[in-house]
Length: 388
Image (tube, rainbow, N blue to C red; front, side, top):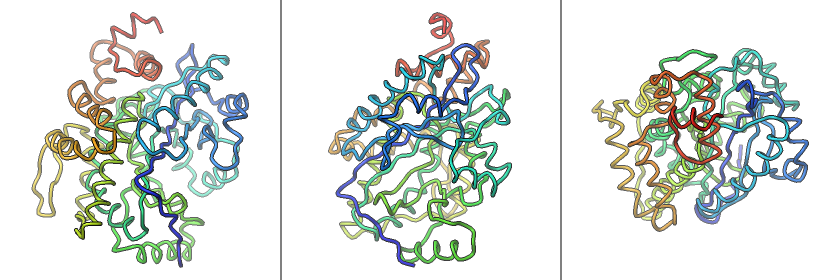
């Protein structure tokens, strides 16, 4: 089975940001995406690539960039669409937020979006799909040749814990603390074709594997392979899907800068004739779990022999290593936000800090609303002072 890869012209960027619709009074999710999107026909009815669109559940509106060259361009694209979405939502008593899960809403209250492919997914997956009231961010980075895509996916697999820990924002599920940094990683990861990518040899092996899945009836389209990192042949990109819902634009920019810098580094190394690292599958799975459970406090496996290191230390080293690449790409300032997260706390840490200070789960929702609106990290005291 031949799969055409529409190669990109350089490390282009595309970002998909899943936004929560939150009732401005009750702080529970509102299942009103259809109504909000209907109020934005010029943004939601483009047949090719609408900037705002449905996701699986009606509590979600996905904001999507066009093809961008830089992180700054992607942020500006998102900001323009988000402003229009915020206005349409506010007119209906809806606030916007983004965390990997909603702290207090129950997944059983979710309403499915009115799209056939979602209905088919629910029918096939049943409970596994019905409970996916989760929110994430996906980053696409352009790749210049199909033969580079699989080696880059393999190499990026080493960074699943880094991607997740920096953005983990879902410690709470239906009103309870799960004890995890990211319960979204578990909820979504239960789908049969989700989870860490299969580590394949080359593009031909990818084609063969997709053909096998189609022939066996495991999938009906290669778009149903929801790996944490996957090649996207139509877009000519590698898509990083590991990020939890990200509360602020600054952190979205950080995630995009991290992805663009890493993919660019690996792409250049391939051009120089290097062989990219390919971690053992058990290391990838184990490290993802460690970040899911412990976030930035995870001790990750650094090689196939089982040696370990604190993830925080590994992240500091990664940021320093990528600084020259990010500088050339024009996203050095966005990459620096990763250092701020290490200092001031990832989203799951900020949420738990509010609880530790005596705040409620509603206060955590309030904080997420303020963080998205004002693009900054907030504390319980600031949320209470804002009177949201």
